[in-house]
Length: 114
Length: 113
Image 1 (cartoon, chains in turn blue, cyan):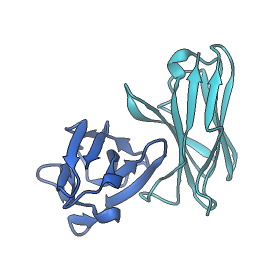
Image 2 (cartoon, chains in turn orange, cyan):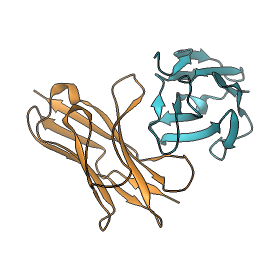
Image 3 (spheres, rainbow over the protein chains, first blue to last red):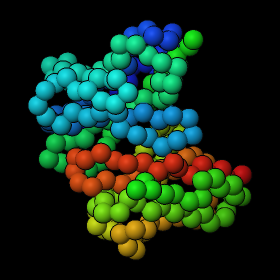
């Protein structure tokens, strides 16, 4: 079975600072990896996904993530955050060639302060 | 496209009552997922369907929960009888194919008193 660990439950940063949200996964088989964002009182929406190919994946709103197979990590980064990036971020994994189920991490609450 | 539509957005009920949550997936999507989100347990997959057929219901907490998908454009999640510990936000999501993006609805916030 797959599992996801998001190491930080809360990350406060100042506006225009860089940010990294950490995600590690556990799986005995190859996986697909996803980052979703949830704004207050809304559903989740996809930021980016890694299916295959280049390990550096670019997503919406200036976010990017790097797949590191040896470290089983998929950390999310943004070089300069805005107030509007304040939200909860979820890392998720699914098994390649397996079911369509996504296993989500517990989430990281990013708060961007002025 | 209107996206995934869920109703009601908020539901307040008393313990023991039946609750029915509704979902309309994005037209043409083959997969439909029901999730529950709580502070304690995070986001949990309850059940998912492929072409209206339930594929995996291992996340359904107990027999009080049931889900149906009578056609490609409608699904329900029913709780009977409801209990205070069922209070949560319930999300419906749909996707076109595996391992495609899942599109989430706005959720139904359920409060059981």
